[in-house]
Length: 254
Image 1 (cartoon, rainbow, N blue to C red):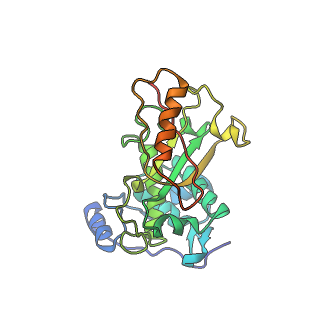
Image 2 (cartoon, one colour):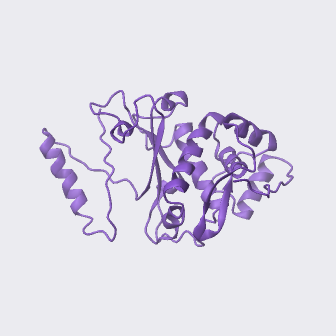
């Protein structure tokens, strides 16, 4: 599918003027952005071999579609390098392929739902994704900007703005963007993507509508059973969910 309309262009004096213009128009997530110049957008598109007017997907309930040019512009604004763009695209393609309206569901709810991205395979190392210490924290460019790029796309293309179509009562810090990789080399288990039928050498993304991460604290447990008891208590504390929820359990070590 090809769109018959290209993104609009604007002229500003410098980075500071652009930043203020983005704030004024609501084109940012509250943080400064990188100027999405035509050259930077072209570099992003050339890396993945897509034409600007190529349509990545559509959200039927919002009657909006996303072009490669729009995705590239927001990835630039988020601070992504071109090497990160395949992960951004894979995330979007998963959303549009399996449940295009989940973009709407993840934002219109009064709950604190947002999108989480888990990366597996060789691409983790190729782009320098943090998969170990503090992987859920700020500080790594790939982790921070890939998740942020997806968030900016939701804001600028699908109007997922707080108080407009984002109706979260209290919101979520994870809405700035949550992306991390699995520490496959340090794990005693098979990587998650392998458990889903992929080969170890495949690079994959897993995308889920999630709530804020919740820490399970077990300071003195010496057995697997004691750790699982703590996990079960946290899960039980949420009571009966309206929908059939699944849990993503991230096991840390030190």
